[in-house]
Each structure stands twice: as structure tokens, then as C-alpha cells.
Length: 380
Ligand SMILES: [Zn+2]
Image (cartoon, rainbow, N blue to C red):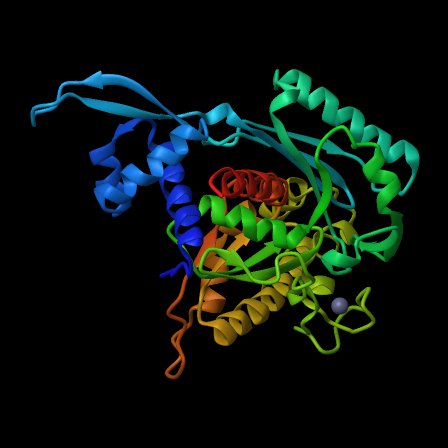
């Protein structure tokens, strides 16, 4: 269980819990909030005073209560802030729109091959504007637009020309130049795609405080989440993708052979066979295509090595996101059969959790960063 260290941390932590319960359950009374959050009535009262002052909650209708005085509904101000996350990958650009409420307000996806040209980044800027317009978002209320991509330098070195690693080879992008195209918003290349997925996991898997986040799509990677905080979130902890799962395997962009990413990205599963989407590949697999079956079996063997190693190294549940998440979940018995065999020693006692909206995990994770820091700033 997370133990906040200072009064200030406690205030932020309790505010987050209360806002989270309100956004999941809608308006409720102070007593119900105390019951639902497990906080004392006086803590709830104190936090609500701050949240009301900062216009994050308002007082709604009074309802009759059995115990004398009528009780008042506490109503969250869900549209106090909006946030947009953009995920840039080799084959797609994905958008997610959030406010303080649930569920995620809107998604958008464009199929486009990455190229580091002005025209490419301009198109993303234009799609962003269209996304904002079609969802009728008040631009004044946009707290930030955050972009996730496979940035392979630590957070404090993200200036000027830096390398990003999409699914083939590193590409040098001018981060300042690109940021200028989005400068009317509080814009940042905030996260490594795979770490953003971990932040998203926090949004979705509220009851899990500690887990390993593993994102599987056109790239593979992740990070550890402890006490609801991804470790080294602004850094480069996204390195699971380069653990070796098959010593004589495919050459990886990092120079090693048989890395998880080289063996288990979408390129190695189906793009090399000429398929352009997971859906098309799995359709062919279900129709008995031999090449697909062979690729899938090898893929599962290699992925199982990685997942087993993560279970053994961390002894934590593993949350799987990324564009492969729904397909792996549909075929989880094949994965389970390989993974959860009866081992006499060190059996796996933890579980695999599959994220929903998995392919949007990085976009949602980036947007969630804005929401989380908005709340922390507001109650500071
Ligand atoms: Zn590698």
C-alpha cells in the first residue's frame, strides 16, 4: 500500500482518490465518499473544502437523509480541464481525448507510414485541430497536448535533434522544430510510448498498485509500476524490448540478436509475411494458413520466454497493452498453456491482465499525464 511521506503528498494523494471515486461513480454524498474511499469523514471534509475552492467539485442537490439534516451531493466538475494524447508509431498516429471523467471521451486513428518530413508533422497538427473541432472541445480548457513516441534519450536531454526508434532504425528528429507546430497548446514530447502505456494502465487498473507494464505492438517494451508510479517514467526504462529471448534469433535494431522486440513486434509476426494488420493476419491464421501458424507458434514461444522472465524477476502481475493486447487476450488459452504449466518449484502465482483500449494505451497514458499533473497543481 502506498504511504505518502509529507502532508502535502497526503493532500494530493487523497484528492486523487476522491476525484477518482467521483469520476467513476458520479455525484455522491460526503458520507458515501468516506465509505467508498476508506478515508475518515474529517479527511474527506478537509479535501472537499480544497476541491470546492479550486472549482473541481460543486455542491449539487440536497437529498433527504435518514439521520436528520438533508445531505448534499458532491458533483465533480469533469470539464475543468481537457487533455489530448498523441501516439506516433511507424504505421499509425492515434489520438485520445480525456477530461476528469470516465470513460475516455474520444479516440481517433490514422494509418500513415512514419516519415520525418514537415508534411508529416503538419498533417498530425491538422488532424489534431480536426479532432478538437469534431469533439467540440473548448480550446481554452485544454490543459495540454502530449505526444508519445519511441524517444530513446532521457527526459532532460530531449532538446534539439534527438533519435527516435520506431520499428526499423533510429531516425533523427528536431524536437524543437516539431514542437513549434503545436506551440499554441501546452505541448511536449512527454513519454516513451511504452512507458505511456504504463501510465494508462494506472488509469484503467485502479486496484493494482504494483505491476509490470508490457506493451506489445509495432514495438515492444514497458516498465515497472510501484505504488501507482511508473519507475523512471521520464527516463529510458523502456528496455524490456531488448532482452534476448532467442539467442540465434533475428537481428535487432540495437545490434543484438533475438531481442524480444526483434522476435515479437508486429513486423516479425505478420508484416514480414505481407499482412498489414493484426486482423488480416489472425483471419488467415483461423483459416488454416500454414505460414501464419508457424509464425504464430514461434511468436508465442518467444513471448512466453519474456513473460516468464518478467514474472520470475519481479513477482508482480503483468498488464499487457498495445495493439496486440486484444488478440492475445482472445487467444490467452494458448499463452496460458505455455506459461502456467505445473512447475514444482517457483510456479507463477501472479496473473496476466489485458488492457482494454490497449492499442490506445500510449495516447491515453500521455493524456493522463496532463490530468494527473493538473490535479496535483490544483491542490498544491
Ligand atoms: Zn534489441
